[in-house]
Length: 388
Image (tube, rainbow, N blue to C red; front, side):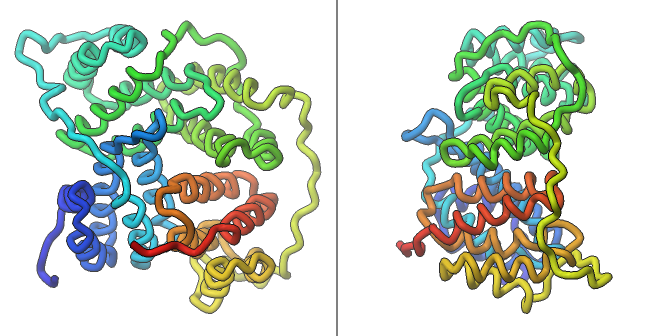
């Protein structure tokens, strides 16, 4: 395959056409360079936003692709080939729909100098898909940066509180996917997001009122550890809420009160929780090393134990390096690889949960070892993957 230059569209098209040979060839050719990794990830995202799920109201393809994107840097510059191969096994099994790329085309008469964001809110809240396309197109044409539109989408989604929190989770995963896209690719993402939001019976967001202070994320993560919810959605929601408020550079103060209300509904009585002086987990003595990645001799025992379902051995291997790694990312590489080669490929929540746990472990610091222990148990319970 040497000499072939792939594009993100070729990976997207290979997934949509379920052409395994073409997709795996691109992984083999492109996963060794930063530019190539980005092309693969872009293609996965562009396919993920087209996911059409006939089983559940919320298609998870773009959330899944977002998890892959977050986990790729755990390879610290090495080729994330095993991660991509596992992800493709899932992406090949999803169903996809067409995108109307002309949905955002405007004639000259439809290009105003000023567009009110509330018009976009109105169209989404009314479930009017065509009016939402039109308002989004005019917003994109009237503002220099799409950051304003994206922050408003997160703000709107945060108002739609549901048991699983899918509206915010889906919307923020999509917003993250749009950030580094241009031109027609942005339209593909917005098309999928607007179709989803107009199906959600959204409330029109009122003027935010309430406490604008920083939220105690560790308290919410501890709550999610004790009460993970269906398919770990409490943890997935908390970490997406954290990302959404961190993303909001322009209007963070108005988003925080909405998230505070959403999290209070999810975790009643959290205001009474104290920040306990938890003892640090038992770790090996510090060696002075500050590892950005793990050598195969440290990494492979973790992965092999997880694949064999040996939870105690996996935890012991993790504890041998816990005090040496600079952050948790190097530990999540073998964890993600094992997750991608076990269980049912259609169980998209497995890798989404692994990525949420990675975010949570970053925020918890030394306390994150308890979260990693739960992840180890989850993967060790997963059955071997059956080949097609």
